[in-house]
Amino acid sequence: MNQDNDQQKAAVDPQVSDQYESLAGEKTPAHLDRAVLREATRAVRADNRKGSFGAWFRPVAFMATVGLTLAIILDLSDTGIFKPVADMSVESAPTIQTAPESATDSAGRNSSQPALSEIKRQEKLAPDQSKDNAGVTTPQAAASESRQADPRQLQKMRVDAVRAVAPPPAEPVEDQARLSNAFTVETGIAEQRVQEVQAAIDANLQSRPGTADQVTAPQAAIATESHVLATPPACSNEQKSDVEEWWKCIQSLRQSGLAEVADQELVNFREAFPDFVPPE
Amino acid sequence: MATVTLEMLRLQASLSPGGNVTYARPMGVTPEDSALMLRYRDGDIEAFETLYRRHNDSLYRYLLRLSLNQDAADDVFQEVWGKIIKARHRYRPTAKFTTFLYRVAHNCFIDYVRRNKRHMVSSGIDPDCSPDPGDQPDLQAEKSFARQRLDAALATIPDEQRDAFLLHEEAGLSIDAIAGITGVKREAVKSRLRYASKKLKAALAEPAIRKERSA
Image 1 (cartoon, chains in turn red, yellow):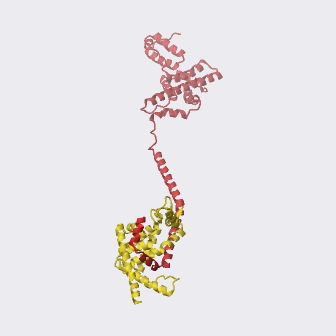
Image 2 (cartoon, one colour):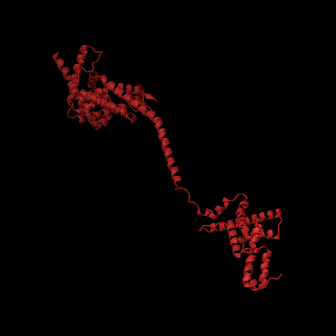
């Protein structure tokens, strides 16, 4: 820098510099001063206006950006892109869905209503066949009448009772797990209904002690219900080959309370051995 | 923000060996012109006015004698400060403010000449422009006459030499700074200054010689 100053001094004659400095005294015109200062002031005021605008605009713009981003993310999650695929195996059988509709905490009570209602319906049909028991509307009377009814009617009544107990057939399903679960639940519901029917009958019997018919009739209803659960032990072919054995089998069925089965066996027995005279 | 005045720099120079004024900027300290410019950037209008008052006359004279046309000088003068005002947000104190100011002025003048090449006629400078109010009338007349000779002398030297001379005299810039502004090497700047000084000396001395002769 010192060298530069020396060179600078050498480059320009000091007399010329002094002479120039003394002569070149022009001042800036006033109108130019005003114009430049006015422009400088205007620029600062414009900055202040932008600043006040930006003071709130920038935060608002930032928040708007954040809000829009969150909205897009939430929308993407709601449209199902991230939604897990529904597990088909978890779905319950259609048949099960119908059962809870009429079920309460003690599922047995309400579940027995269809069976009782079916029995009552049968009771209503029974008085038409028996004029002697016109005033009786108990299930016992209906059951006693059923024993004397046509076998085909008996079969129909049994089918109706089964239908009343059993839930409607399930829709065709592909999942074996659902099938097994449905069957298990259906069986359980049927068992509950049988127990409820038994309890109701027992209660009825206690309130009105009746004849053997009144006792066997509800038993017949229960037997009908039980028929859904397991195939009653009918007479075997060996027994059927012998007339007396077959007769004994029928009697044992009747004694064990399976009157309807015994009646059916009796029908078959009559067809097979029409000339047989039962011993007294 | 700490500011450094010329007195502080001279004090520092006096303490340094050689006693020369060092123009090296201490670390972390902003020169005064740059500080005013930064304050104006932040919205201080008074800082700009101070800065403007400090450099407006020298800049005007530079443009006036460079263009040799008062109208051109007025237009370029406004244009230069307009650019300074617009560039306030981009301003960085990497160099002296004077270097920055005269670089802008030099470029604006070149652009003006290119735009108005056909109309750039030396209209001369009004010698009575802004006379010193404190001067007596005869002194004012003498000065006016001398100024005319100076302007006439300046008009005779080439534009590049005149430019270098005026940057040296009005802006007080170093050879390196002048080289940076004009875009030439420092040897070229030295040469231009030498020739300009020689011619001006001869032109300014001529009336004096005639006076002596007439006397």
